[in-house]
Amino acid sequence: MTELKGALIGCGFFAINQMHAWKDVEGADIVAICDRDPERLKVVGDQFGIDRRYRDAEAMFADGGFDFVDIATTVQSHRALVEMAAVNKVPAICQKPFAKTLSDAKAMVEACRNAGVALMVHENFRWQTPIQAVRKALDAGTIGTPFWGRFSFRSGYDVFSGQPYLAEGERFIIEDLGIHTLDIARYILGDIRSLTARTKRVNPKIKGEDVATILLDHENGATSVVDVSYATKLSKEPFPETLIELDGSEGTIRLTQGYRLEIAHGRGTTTMDVSPKLLSWASRPWHNIQESVYAIQQHWVDQIKRGAEHSTSGADNLKTFALVEAAYDSAARGQTIDVGAML
Ligand code: NAD
Ligand code: 89V
Image 1 (cartoon, helix red, strand yellow):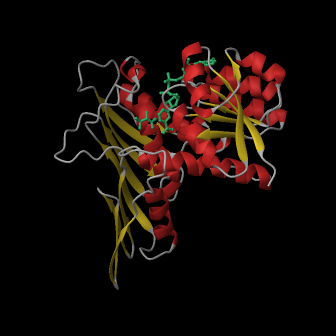
Image 2 (cartoon, helix red, strand yellow; image 1 turned 120 degrees about the vertical axis):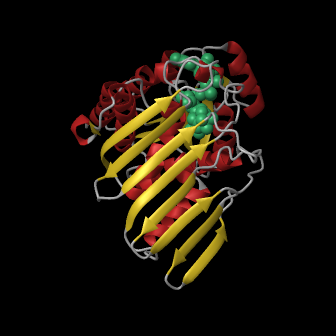
């Protein structure tokens, strides 16, 4: 198979996972890296043996020699870098959150569409092994038509030590973590017509909200709840597990802590272990996320080779990003928001 050559921009905390995953992905190789911080450039360049190193993305694009760019910077630079990729006719992967605002995100999708290049958002949570298992169980039809769901991520894990910027923004949990949970809700129960949200800040040391409860009205008539918290101290820390409950006309699905999947229906109950693999470079408890990084990056290559749309294309992710904006708007105004009208 011909190897696609990639360039990565942003050599920070999470990019290490992406670089490890690129080593495992079949059909692609990273040939150049960029970070405006020389120390991060050296750390990642030395660890992964990359000689082509740039402090400026424009200079890297000017030199060229790669088939796609993987943007692993924080949100502030996403629009400029995606538009730079479009101008240079280079397909792009962009980390979540896709953009600072929905109008920026729409402009980024438009720029790539006009340039005729693929754009995928690195929205990896739907690629986690347990989430894929829930989707498969639902698709099998055993529980009939789903009419209710709960997508829950409640934790007391200290995310701020690895990602200090998370404590500093006016917005926190919906934009950083809830965005994944909302995407999972869409992936499992379909697109959303309207939502109602409530938020809270419990940890006094951070600026943004660390608790959110969001009620979703799905287009197919199902109702679900997305509840996320980084202020929840449990006897057994579940980070970074998303727990799922689905009720259908013929049965129920439960994804419970410890990666246990239970499917109950008229003919009995099936229980499965849907634990993620511990990849050679991964470490607990992050291995669930790390395996999904590998899965989404392999999907990027596979779809590019097929000339097919990505599961979390820029266009798809507008529908997830709209939920983030709608949730903040709903919490601020105390009103239900019509999500369809935002797209
Ligand atoms: P970080 O601050 O540790 O790293 C970002 C790096 O990008 C820094 O080294 C910075 O110098 C560099 N950078 C910023 N702007 C740049 C520019 N214009 N040109 C070149 N370099 C630039 O941040 P992080 O924790 O690695 O997070 C990066 C992104 O990954 C965020 O958007 C975050 O939300 C996301 N993230 C995703 C997951 C996931 O599971 N998908 C998990 C963690 C973080
Ligand atoms: O996936 C993320 O975006 C991370 C974390 C899981 C820690 O919230 O920031």
